[in-house]
Length: 390
Image (cartoon, rainbow, N blue to C red; front, side, top):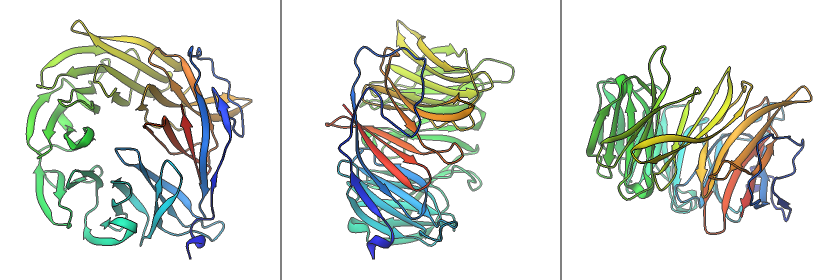
């Protein structure tokens, strides 16, 4: 029965101003934004199994939540549930043979692709109906009528990724003499950017045709792509004993600006309009979020927010609506405490969500919608909470 898998779904009418209450308050030294939004805890649910992965659709309307058995309690299963993000309603559940490796979802839970640690890729249709299974160990992305099978861990010789159609038939293999380091999809299936070893970065269109290729003067750590009709790209790279750099590349593939970073970064995101770059890093010098703007042929740092301590766990940042979201870890009362922070474009602290974690790790996703920004975050090992920021 369904109740054997999901114990409870609860809509919570709690409304918070500025920041959310949590199991432990977190004191932040960042200056507040002039406008403090309302943060509403919209819904939550508990799983008998341990949550291991979250995947949000590009439109933000559906969320996949995967679990593994909870060996301490003897409950739970290898499974994935698909959730409507607005209501918290569980659209369907799918039992699996082994733990989820990666997953992708689209079209309001009507299309999902899941790879597992037994080397299989499974496709599901409306109501979670199984469609097909093929052998493929990769990170799947749904792009229009294609499934991009990104070999992020152990690619085959000369293979960056494979493309499957909606019937599970492999239609192409994208060759590469170098290993692939990063992949980001452009909005609405307009294409994708891939970063390879030896400083290679490529922008591909929706038909997987190369639009341009550039070589950076160092190894690439991350890349990002805007949501514009003609996407722009930002690339984070570095060389031994030199400062890391960000290169800003226009839609024609022409590098328009390069800037050096005053801190160590690991992740990069572009704002949807392609005019600003967010860089985030965690190092012995602390946790830093930097905001950069392009103008007058230059890429300049607008502001930077730093917590001067190394974090045991540091998730990637995200951009949702007007907010730049980053996870910080602070030490208060001799305890490490995790908090998700939403900054406005001027660097002001707009809202924060203290996060209850197991051994410091957690998962979150965020997206913008007509009702506001929705943030979904795990609480402990077996609970997920959804917040609406407006």
